[in-house]
Image (tube, rainbow, N blue to C red; front, side, top):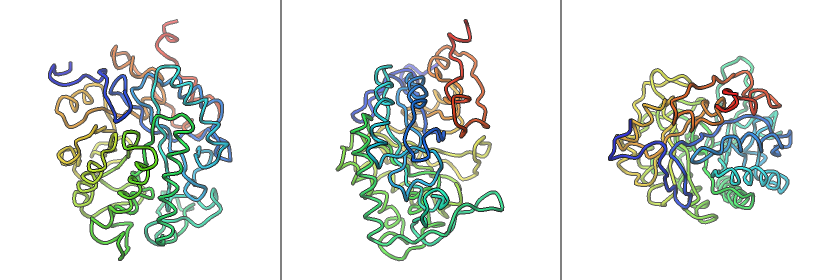
Length: 362
């Protein structure tokens, strides 16, 4: 049961300009149901509408440019066709009473050349590792100052496109070893200019990118996701606290709507790390809404709300198999199990065909 002096998972929360009906957030989840040209498809309307009971839906990673999106059948936000195809998705979520933001995504060195047809871009000329002998990644080009400005322009343009498409805001993807993360971490950032070296310099690309989005659509519609502890997709840092705590302070100073942290643990089910979680330190410097993510159950989620370390909790894989996750958590009902074999396949199987409680009862 929630502590009476702290909010429940099911209490409303204001996330900048976004009034969320509860504190159960749907985390971004790559699903691969867009076209080969990265245009959202009709089946995505049903998928997101089914999950509109979340206080806030954060979409799957959505590319800011052709260069930045190297994942097959993931959606984008850099063409008018993509914007138009997102409109019925956002409208369906709003009609169902939900709120939805687009996670805007530049993959950096993780953008596969077999998808983009281009050499990837990163903070430095490095190549991402892969867990199989055949590595689909290529050595990245170290970003010039012009490349940095271009990427920041793309974040801002994607944010404007998201608002035109009807989204309530955006979340910059700054986690999981993608472009912003590649600038933040000393394991991937080997630069010796104003964007590398000291933590202050490595934070610069993130801070400027977020500031560009804030200028484009307003701080109250702007969030970001970070993954501060442990290695992810080959990106790591020798002293995470030295960079991610001041990064959070810089985000606080920009007055953004929310900060989401994906934090690994030693016994994690989707990535493990012995590196201590930084959310308690980040909580001290970030006064806005703080959303935590990774391996939460209802009790542990409520415990972190009670402790004050989190204002809301994001659930990922549980939302795949439970479109009515909020109601299931509220009732203490059993959860469906997701099928990883259908995460990235095409069609409704493992996407829109998971039953809701009422369906099961019938």
